[in-house]
Amino acid sequence: MDGGAAAELREAHRLAAHTDRVWALAWNPAPGPGPVLASCSGDKTVRIWKRAPDGAWHCSVGNANLPLLPDVLEDTHNRTVRSCAWSPDGRLLATASFDATTAVWEYNSGDFECVATLEGHENEVKSVSWSPSGTLLATCSRDKMVWIWEVQPGNEYECVSVLQGHTQDVKMVQWHPSLDILVSVSYDNSIRVWADDGDDEWHCVQTLTEADNCGHSSTVWALSFNQKGDRMVTCSDDRTLKIWDTSADLSQPKTGEGHESWRHLSTLTGYHDRTIFSAHWSSDFALILVELYLNTFFGISLFLVHRSEDIIASGAGDDAICLFAEEKSSMVEGPSYKQILKKEKAHDMDINCVRWCPQLNQFL
Image (cartoon, rainbow, N blue to C red):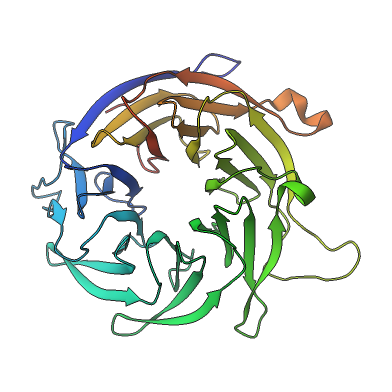
């Protein structure tokens, strides 16, 4: 598929089980006999999906080489489950809810058990994310706060920092893929970058705004890093995607004239007609990836993409999926990105989340 060939996209499977809006999903990053994903919903549940030997996807499936997983995690949250995230080793699953709590689930002896419930936010928890080391967990909320929790022995979690700075609802938190740098995006239109100062004190080391950094002009909904961590994409209610150079190591903050910072590289505009709710950067080692899209019609669809390069996917309120790739020939004037595919009406309603599968490199 090199040499400018068009990307190919087709729906391979549709998963229907949730009884309310599906908000988010997470692929388990751990290697194994097959990919595992979690989906969370307004029906207050989390569902675990695996691919059966015949290629079909089910909430529970098992055999000698593919252990049985329970299909539904329930009776813990009493409101919408808005976000879910696997720990880097794939052993723990964190779920964030509108009931103002975050639950941590552990898979042991063929079953998931809720081993911790984290309380502290004043209202809805919107997003949860594990640090690359798995020792820290970040949550954010409608209360405008970001909390950082440290994993302790015995399934204990200690809040080590409450980050204040956003002036509105915080929509998402995401850790840098290799550094203990945390990024948060908000209804206040800003992107904040947080780092430890070396004395266990967390501070905002950079704020990306429209006025100072060519940032977004409306609510920022989501972000995603590429695999190397030197690029970041953000998406917004202003119907744009923005690409950022994140190669500067802000985990070692420097002050004074000429200090390093993250900077705007490119703005992708005119591709979506409504709010862009989600963007995700593919892993650059995969030739053929499965993308999963969640919508407000209580359904999950898996799409097959045949493309041999690094791709950004976006999903929006216009029900469309767009794929973007870097134009390698444009590096003289700086990187730019081109749309390689747009699939109209990928779902019947808003596309809330797009995620690449890290393991699959072949068609289902």
